[in-house]
Length: 155
Image (cartoon, rainbow, N blue to C red):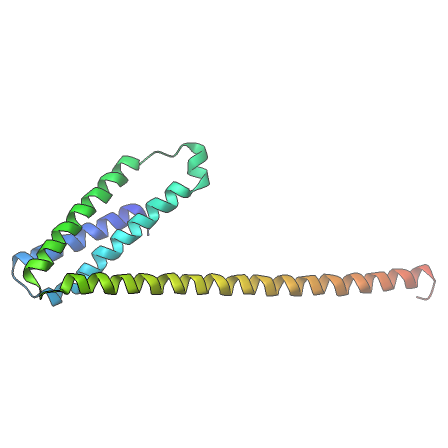
């Protein structure tokens, strides 16, 4: 998801959460919005990291949007602290801590799934390279046999 869309999703989820808390709604009614907000935060951090590590932006000196990204990250950090205080005040004791534990486990599962997907892709590429190598070896042998046969006037 592009950076601006991620920022917009985080802001929208935050406004819904804040409105729910102000209206006194149950915290369990807004767990989905809290999840969207925190996922948007993770996506924004990953997008900024990818942009920073991008060799093309390094070569071109891509500093465009750095200030806006910094401001967005700071705003999300403040909003996250405010959500934490709201959850600690209005939710059952330990809700925020449990959410952090669950989020940590979900992050580990996503990393493991990503590693598994990358491993499967590498295995597929390796298998394709082996098949391609075998094809070239067989066709080279067939061409060699044909050339020898032509040279010796057998064909």
